[in-house]
Length: 323
Image (cartoon, rainbow, N blue to C red):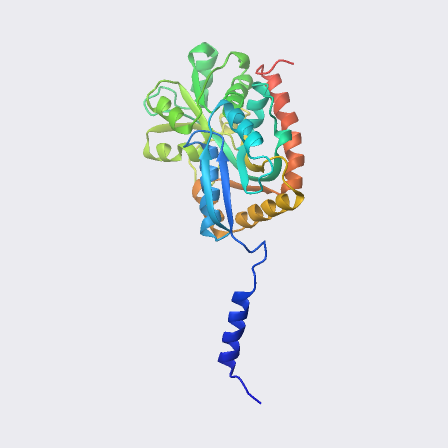
């Protein structure tokens, strides 16, 4: 009887394993992720962070990111719903901004038409001014708004988004008429940053990570963050500690097209969940200063519905949407 040594048996087992067809779950994916905004902003950063984490961790063979800017994501979601229908290898980044923008723009395409996959992150907001600005803190900004609200020009993301809502809430909180806020929307973070640095506007609003580099370099002055408490390691006062009761978080998420199968939805949800647990993703969260706010598809779908109702109520309360 022929006896095989342990090394030979091990080699045979390895060959057999290699020849066994990989399961669908084990096969690497080729994905496309749309960022429905111009390069440089939060959605673009999120899409490219996903691209980096998915490929670095070996979850996907390739991830292509495309940008479709316009109207707070309204242009992008319309293209996504119409051109990617039924495609289980495509996803789109979105978030708080799109909820408000679709409401304000009275979009014919809504978030009810996409397939919820996951909420990914939350991030506090910051208001910044150029380093040369006479505005030193939140009280100075409040005084300028009370003196002449029309002269205080805010730069931020698309109309109806979290930046716009924050400008309105700031005004509302200090007793000013929020419907008169002079807000200038930009489709990309690079454009709004140029306007702030060039003193074309009074102040800028965005996620903390977007302006972090310019704040640390001294080009921008942060006058307040929208967190309930001071962020460890970040030397920026909250609005609450400056006497302004303003707390707000921006969340970002990812959705799939309409018309995908239950199996495709399950696969994409599992892929994204695996990504969020990877070391590559955790490293990105730490680097960007994003908070992990993961919700799976079913929980996220419930959250999205409640958030749509909440944002609608906020926009009506500050005069951005008529009742």
